[in-house]
Length: 450
Image (cartoon, rainbow, N blue to C red):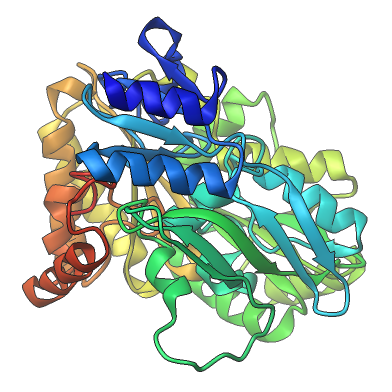
C-alpha cells in the first residue's frame, strides 16, 4: 500500500519492517495475550522520524500501537492485524546528566538498567527500579507509570519526571524538557501522559530527577507470625529505620514455593509472612533495628545479608521469576487497597478461588509498604479455562474494599472491562473527553484503557 511505501522511504529498510520481516516479538507483551502480528513494525531512530511517521499514519487514519520493551502484563502493547506497531527501541541514548540540577535527560527507548548504571557512574541513584530492568524501557515505564520495588521511598515513575517530550497523534511534538521541581504554569502535561499507555501520545524524551547515590544499603529477610506483626513492623520501620527504601511481603505459599525453586533454605520453616526490609544505611544500623523489633515480639527470626550475593538471594525469591516456568500459564494480578486490608483481601480471594477452582495454586506477595498486592494464580486446566472468572472474583473483592484493579501494570486490554470497578462513570467520561481532544481520529493504541 502507498502508506507503507511512504513509511519505508521515511524510515529506511531497518526502520520499516513489513510482511515476513515483522519479528514475532511484536505480537505480544509478557502477558502472552497478543494473537496477531501488526501489518508493519516501525522503528524510528529520531524524534523527527517519530513525528513524521505519525503524521503519515494520521493523514490516512492508520492506527498505531506504541511499543517499548514489551515487558507489560496488561496487553497494552499488543497490536491487531490491521495496526501498525511503532517501536521506540532504536530511539535510545542518554543525552545529558546535569550534576548541578541532579537530572538525567534521555530518550524513550533507553533500557532502564542502562539509565541506572549511567546514573550510578555519575554518583547518583536513578529512582525507578523494576524486576524487568534489563529489558523494559523508560518510555514504557512512563507510559504505564510503572511502580516497582522502591516506591515507598522514591514514588512511582510519574513522581520522578521533571520534563517530557511527546509526539501527538498528528505528529505534533510537545517539548517541555524542563529541569525544575517547581513549575506551576497551568495544566501539568507530564502527569497526563504518564500512565496513558500510549493512547494520548508517544513519549520520545524525558528528564528524570536523580537522587544521591546511597553510601550504603542494607537488606534483611524477616520471618513474622501474623499480618498484624507485618503492619506493626512497617509502622516501626517508617519511624525508626533511616533510609527505608523497600518493604516487601510474601505470604507463606508464595515464599515457600519460590524458596524451593531457587534452591535456598533461608528459614528452617516457611513463616506465615516473610518480609524483605531494605534501607539506605549500614548493616549495623539495620541489625540494631531488628533487635528492637525482635524484642517487641514483631519478628520471629531475621537474616541480614552480609554480601551482595546474599541480598540477591532474598530478591530472587521475592521476584519469583522461576514460577513462570514451573507454573505455565500463570495468571498475574496487580491490585491495591488500604494497606490494613491486604490480608483480608488475600484470605477472601484465596478462599473464593479455591472454592471455584479446587487444586489451583493461589499465592500472594507485594509492595506492602505502598499498599500493592500481587496475586499469582495457576489453574489446573490452564488460564483459558477460567481466567475471566479469576478476574471477576479478585476484582469484585477489590471493588468492595475500595481499591484499584491496577496498582502499577496499567489497564491495557486485560483490565479494560474492569475499569469501572475502580473509576466512576464521571471519571471515565472525563478520560474519554481527554482522549477525544488529543486523538480525535482515535488512531493511537485503539481499544486500550477505554
